[in-house]
Length: 312
Length: 287
Image 1 (tube, one colour):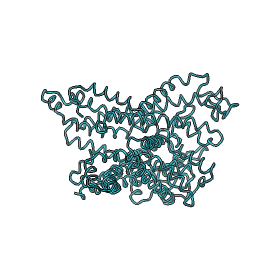
Image 2 (tube, helix red, strand yellow):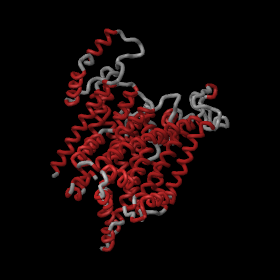
Image 3 (spheres, helix red, strand yellow):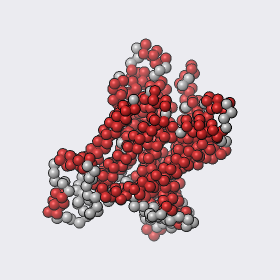
Image 4 (cartoon, one colour):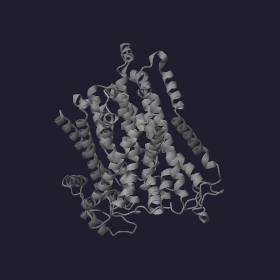
């Protein structure tokens, strides 16, 4: 059963990846003009040799196969704008930094969101609950770049508590990951609260109470276990939202991660970098969604009876 | 979804009453109404235009002449905010509307058609859904150049799938009801059943999902603006104004404050109304 599921999901993953790579390639080829045309006129011979150097003078199908082969062998080609830099190098240098920030933000969002949501559900329909949920709606309503700039201004510039920007010590990572994790945290808090409220109303909670279990035991064994499953489903979209956020956050805090590179490559129209990073990020994202699906299946015994339930 | 003999219209009227009783949702509705009204009349309330530059009055703080101050070219921020409101709200609502039409058609047809074809349709949607939306959006914007049409295409390219999935799930559920069998026994065609019996019964989910799509579209537009892929000057959306204001925050905070406040306010209002709609339409959460 599980082997079949993995096989099915994996084949979707491969089809989707193939789709992304192909789409990326042909979209890039559809751009009018030439990546080497600059404001100053470039002599025809130089253009020609540039195109030959990057293989742009070959027929489009040959280029396509070369590109696909490059992806398969993990060789994403040189950057058009930064000489001596390959896309591989950029990813290798930038991704670990982005990963640290992302992992911190993820931890922050999960821990904060689940505990706030739980607290809120314990005070269901009381003023504490209303206050927390109002905060959560505000949290999902403020664009991350505004939150990041304001945090940077107040905490770093006015109060001088943490470094303003750049990369180095742990202190440098606090503000960016707070700004990055705030929105998913608010979302998780809402999700947790909604599920908790639903689970609290179930008969088995009443049974547990009647058996005389301590509130703590009920919370840990019955409530959290049952109400956190939907939060796990959210892990997929969560990683994508953290990824999105990281573009903005890294730019604002001047962090030399991959997200910041991606944004500057968009502004510079550095096509090979855009292509390479898109393919790379798509792979990471789809893989993480695949893992989440698998995890969900392993954690929820109800799904093992009827797999199609998950599709709803 | 027990509605008994009272009929479907009563159900929606009740949901509407429920919505108005919900204080958060009511606040949201009032804020939205105010924003829409101001988007209509706001630009005409003073005698500045959104593109007039006053180079001698650059970065002027809010005053009697410029209610929200001026930007780096001396343009009146008050007028630009309400022009931006038109663009941001238009993008949000249009994207939600297109998503709704495509999603309802796709999801509805998938739910009614032969199971083999349904399976195929939903698998295609699954694969499309697993494509990273943001990356494709950025790619598309880089290639097609920025503009409202591109933003709309990019937003709706994968945006409809969520709606299609929800609608299909809902219709499959509603399809179990006896009145559907009755309609079939009376010889109604599949399309008639879909249009007359099934879709009216899932309007609640459609409205809720569409309402919650609007803030995410506005959010996305603001994000694209930050990347420099938003609408081009002299036009302005809230997103482009906020991202222009970011650099000026230390010395001219009003340039960030007003667009940021209005984006957040609109998002908040749409989210609150969407939540209220969901509570009003979802009988499970009624206690």
